Structure formats: structure tokens, C-alpha cells
Length: 372
Image (cartoon, rainbow, N blue to C red; front, side):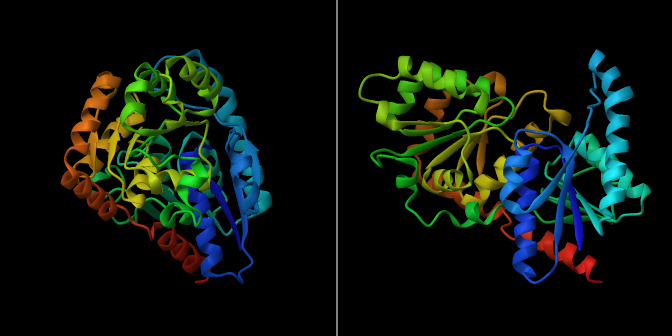
């Protein structure tokens, strides 16, 4: 059985796919699954799929920007058509039994080519406000899996929607077997504050964190995911900003791998993060209180909508980007820590929001369709 996955190529698209693939293998270990990924090249794609036995086929992909840009001309008249012909070729040669799309600009050529070649299409939408790619793909899809409750997810035909949550890897759900403090070299002397900068908007978060880094370290042990592009600069600046004696409480990472992220979520007392759906559902799965800082000007303002949809449950607080100032953030965190009942309630609401079975449910749907 051949299954083609596609998406935008970012970690937020790749991690749920990995969770689904692992569940499919767990449910039916004797099945002859052949997994492929057809999509745009990205720094995450080949590295993250390397250990999963997924064959990667790269295509050109262009974006349709909702503002004037000369790049639109190149993308619309060159990259997108070329990407479609590449996708058509790969789908024709692979001849998959099913295509599963996670959305993102790179998925559109694959979905359209699959529809023309009469390949069944399933899609999954992580955000509460669907992106343009999945809105287009929904016209061709047999099933549309959504992460947020149905009333929070507009634009899709109701008869196609199945609310399942966002697939989260088992390591994140269960935590590492080894002591998280040893994995991350923590002292264990203070409460742990986890900063998760995403692939977008990490620089802005880094700047604010660094501006009051010693203030955070006086009260907390800090795990800081900086983003790969910013790591060296952050480490260099942190050495200047940290007061003597506080260095041992600061733990910067360019990118937390699966074990490190599982450990960080397990041991953290509160998480400060952007509001991508992947991050929200991983925080929820770990049952952690959080402060979300949605990225400004994200497509369809999906991060703002995600953040408030999650915050409505009582699991998180939202600080919008213009108000994200380090001194205000630190004061807000200290206020929360003075209310242990509130912390406990936020953790409980986060856990209730998560659906740890999302990956399994989607995997079962795919297998049932293929074996029908």
C-alpha cells in the first residue's frame, strides 16, 4: 500500500505526519506500507524523515501572497506551474493508493495532480482558521480532519469534517524514560520556564527575552529554543546580559529534538510560546500552563485565532505581539506563580483540550479506507 504525504515542509506539517506514520505501523506492523513525501524542499524535511523510512520527492513550490509583490509574478507564472508538472509526474510514477495533505503552499500542486489522476485525498487542518491551501484542497478531499472543535473551524463542508485534534508524537505524549533534568542538564534548584520560539517570529521573542534575561534567571531556570538561525547570536549576547552566578540557570537550544522537547515539556512549570497549532497541541498534551504570543500578520491571523480558542478553555493566557515586553511578561508569570490553584487549573484545562488519540484515529481511518 502506497501513501503519499504532502505539506508545506515546516516542522508544524512534518511532526503530525510522523505521528500518523508511526501509528499506522503500530496498528498494522505486518502491512506492506510504502510511505512517500512529495513537497517543497525545507531544512526540516529530509532530516526529519530520514529515520522514518519515508521516501522524499522534492518539487518546486510558489506562494500566492495577498499583497503586491514581484515575487508573485515569478511564483504564479513559473514556480507553481513547474511544481504542478513535477507533482503530476511523481504521483503518476508512484501511483499511490491515497494522498494525505497537511496543507501549506507546497501541498496544492500535489493535491490537484492527485485529483486529476483520480487518487483519493484526505486532508488535515491544524489551525482554527484554515489556510488557503486546505480551503482549495477541501473541494477535492474525501475526508477533512480538523484539530480545533467544529464550531471554531469555518470554511469546510460540515459533512466532510471529522474533529480529531492534532497528531502528537508518542514521545511528547508519554515523556522520555530518562530523567528530563539529566537530559537537559538542569540544576533543579528553581521552577522551570520554557520559551519556544517557532520557525517564524523567533527573533522578536529572543530580543525581548535577552533584554531581561537576568530578571528571568533570578526566579526561574530557563530553557530557551532560539531557532537555528538565531542561536549563535543569542548565545553570544546572553554571555553579556547574564549577571554573574546565574549562568547555570540558562539553557539555550537552537532546536529541541524530539527527546529534548519531550523532556523540556515534562519538566517545565510554564511555557511561553508562539501560537502555531503544533506547539499548542504539544503543550496541551503535556498538560502545561502556557502564555501564548501569537505571531502578528500570520495567514488569516490563524495564530491569534488559535491562541484565543485555546485560551477560552482556561488553559492559557494570551499576550499579543505589540504588548509582548519582557518586564510585563515576567511580572505576569510571577503573578501566576503566586496562584498555585490557577496554575493547577490551567494545567488541567490544557490536558482536557488535548486529544492524545488524534494520530491513532487518523491512522485507523486511512487503514480502514485502504483495506475496504
